[in-house]
Length: 73
Image 1 (cartoon, rainbow, N blue to C red):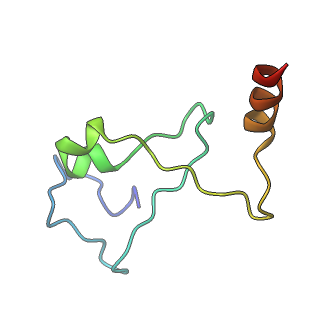
Image 2 (cartoon, rainbow, N blue to C red):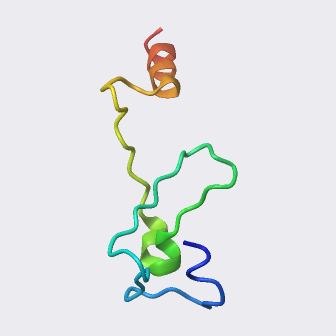
Image 3 (cartoon, helix red, strand yellow):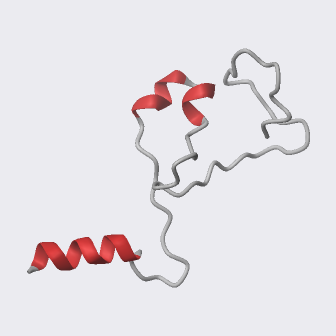
């Protein structure tokens, strides 16, 4: 993705990658170098919170499960 936008000053709502129609920005919320691409494309997306993707086995993620247990104690 970054090679495709090298030299581009700003991304607009009409931006498209040359080799694919869709782009999914999936990142771990605690990854120190991950960031959201959406606000670069549309500044109004700055105020929209990222969605949480459910765990692949249907369980809660460890940090959410621990948080729930600590609150219930």
